[in-house]
Structures are given as structure tokens and as C-alpha cells.
Image 1 (cartoon, rainbow, N blue to C red):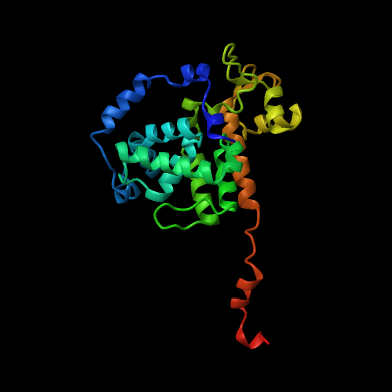
Image 2: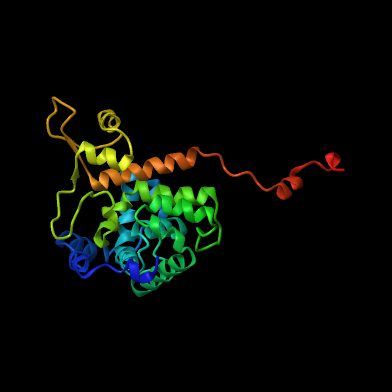
Length: 273
């Protein structure tokens, strides 16, 4: 996929180049007074504020510094903002390592490198967790600080994307709408997906999709509590479910066995010829 093919059409640009909403602007102005939150403070917590809440607040502080930069890199190169942000949280944590113009250059450089070195994986850009797994298999998912990679690292990145709901950061520039089926820019339909739409995305029967909904594994909204035939799921919720499912499959897959040349080093010398 060429870089030009990643550029949105004029109609898409009109939809995506929208100003920040008032709530986001207010949060950004407020958070500028809190450039960092010490990691020990987050872990120690308090008698009133749970650690999980403090962690989400820390993510909010990080997003106030780097969120727009990550979304701009997605707009320019197509690499999902959720992936870039999740990787940043693993590499740098909560501390203000980068902000402002520095963050902008950091994400642009990383997104440009990934789109250039791994063009075959660009089809996965709308699926950030699968994209991270694919990069890991190609040796292209590396910690920016220490150069490390591996199964633990890709798991950490995937967990940040899923646990912190970062997939929603992608919607500003379009790739988050992968599962908004049948959506035409000129005639947009609601983002609520009916059971048939969900089944089409998951590649299963409507009955199977209904069982996922009834079990609570796939969240949505029931229009008629008395029957399971009328319910809807938003595209963002379906997308989050699919990414979580792909991550579970990745975790369940045995780690690759080391090459035979490396295994020799683990054999006792007495057993060698």
C-alpha cells in the first residue's frame, strides 16, 4: 500500500479535520497545570482513590501531552493512534518524557518508519492489536528505550490498548470505523449494528452472535428486554471485542521454540559428543 493510498479523500478530510470538542479543550487546559504524576504516588494510592482510578488519571495526563501528536501521525501515515499511544505507555510510562513539538516528531518518525519498513502489514492498521502481533512476528516491534522485544513486550502493548480503551482514539481520523458496516460518507447510517451486522463481522451465525450478547461477553443495548432478537452493538464495542478476542488467541498460542542451534547451549556438556 503506497503512502498516497493512505491519504483520506476530500470528503473524508471534511469529516476528520474537525475541531476538538469543548470537553476535550477544557480537559487539556486543566491538565497543563499537572505535567506529571509520580509513579510511586499512583501505586501507593490513598484511602479514598483506588489505584485503578489513579492509573486512568495518569493515562489522561499522558494523553494531554501526546494524544494530538499520535492522532496527527495516524492522519499522515495511517498507523493507528491507539497503537502508537499504547507503545508509548510501555516505553515511557507516565512520566513527561516527550511533549509538544517533541512528541509530534517522535510519533511522525515512528509511524513513517513502520509504514516504510513493513508495508505489507498496513492492511492491519484498523486492527491495532493484530498489527502489534504481526510486527512482533517480523521483529519490527521494539521498545524505543532499550531495544527489547518479544512476547512479553507485545503483550504489554496489547494490554495498554485494550485495558485503557485506546481504540476510541482512532475514530478522529477514520480507521476506528472498521466495523461501522455499510457506512457511506454521503449517506451515513447509525453506528449501531444489528445482530446480522455483528454476525457478518465475526463470520458466524446470528444465533452464535446472540449467544455472545446474551452471555455479556459482547456488550450492547437491548431495545426489548423481553426478547434477544432486538439488540444493537456499536461499532466501537464490536471492534474492542474483536481485538480482545485476537489477543486472547495470541496469549493461548505457545511461544515459539528456540532454534536448534540455540538449544544446544542448554544441553549439559556431558551429553554432548
